[in-house]
Amino acid sequence: MKKKLEEIADKDGRFSAEAMRFVYEGLGYTAKKVVAEPGHISGQVLCDGLRKLAVEKWGRLSKLVLNSWGLESTRDFGEIVYLMIKHKWMSAQPNDSIDDFNDVYNFETTFKDQFKF
Image (cartoon, rainbow, N blue to C red; front, side, top):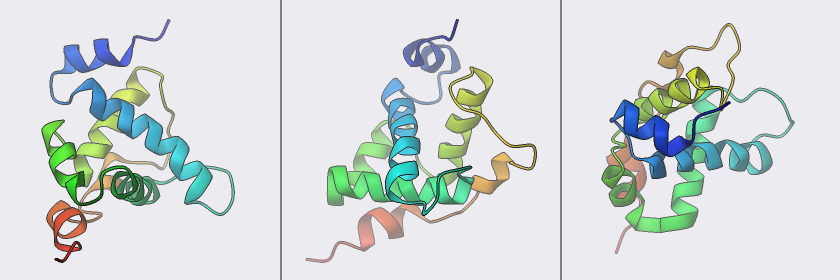
């Protein structure tokens, strides 16, 4: 039986359950709205989908919301993905790596600097 995301988050201690739910929601969002064809979603493509979902949900507050959940970089998305893989919430292909999530984009530039007043 799969553990609940809250249990996984509590035991791991690095990210909130909200962060984990966001990444899980982002996988579905990416599959529906970002990729052209159904199939495997790479770490870079998932990061792009998570960026779009965050901006759609919170606009210029995206960075603040993500940071409040312990998310500071795209690598953190990968840490959550691999934690969820470990607990059977997601799956990976043999050639996937957590390094696929390294420096996909900068949170400061992506979630803050793009909004001009």
